[in-house]
Figure 1: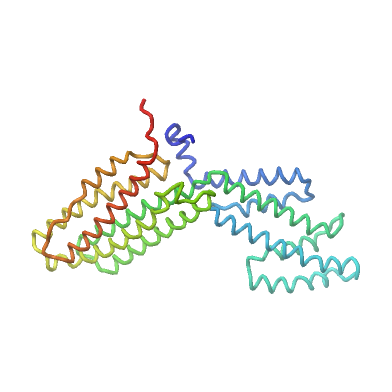
Figure 2: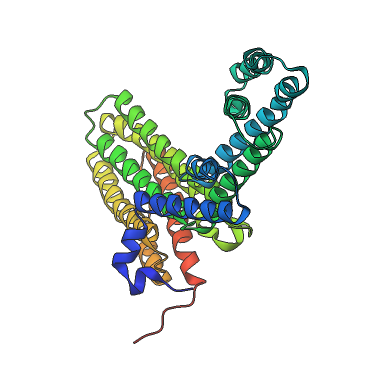
Length: 351
């Protein structure tokens, strides 16, 4: 597979832009829907084009959800429209009366299940818009148009620039780690309310939820399990979540540290935090590089970063010794995770 980021960096940056990716998907979906509608000779191909625009979303999850709602609602509306069409053709009911008979139950259904609102639209199209063809063909063509639009949008979302979720996951992972560092540095000042740290932790949790959402999106991008094709991404949210929880505990300990610590303990804690900061910075840079392209940094770099992490020395404060030890352990595990994936790749050929 061609590494676009290596041979054409500007194109990789261009394709990593969410707006550009969605624009390409929309244009592709409309093109595919229009071509299929032309092949099937639909009487009203515009519905297929409109549906493809509505269905095609930034994520596969949203696309599937939109497509399901469009399709289910259309099928319900098409089925219900058979009743007023029959009343109009064979019982010669007035249009408004036949339409009301079908519209009222659909309105109740939509009030209960808003995702079925396309049923009302389909009923209106089938009954209120005149046609020269067989009236029973109107709901059938409507369902066919929606099928084309939904199918085109879903196909394009899967096939066109479908690895955006991986980039989003690592981009939000880098943001989460930055917020973790900011929370630790804020606590390091010692002149901050605990509520401020809690608010910063909430921001970390919100960013981490975006990482998890992108992970779930990445699971749907391929038929192969994510654990097999991208083990680093599959385990990334859990590692960062553990690091976030550790950082919150450490921040709490830092706030009470100046009240009981000796000068030596304060100096030791400062050196530990400085060493951990180098590890955090490497994680941020690693995630940001993976958000652009699968760069494949040398695994030796990760080993060097872990070797440079501080080794916890004995201290008279058992709480500090405990929480710092846990944070260092989980920090090493995350760095190892981000480095192990590279060790399994084929190194680039030297020039």
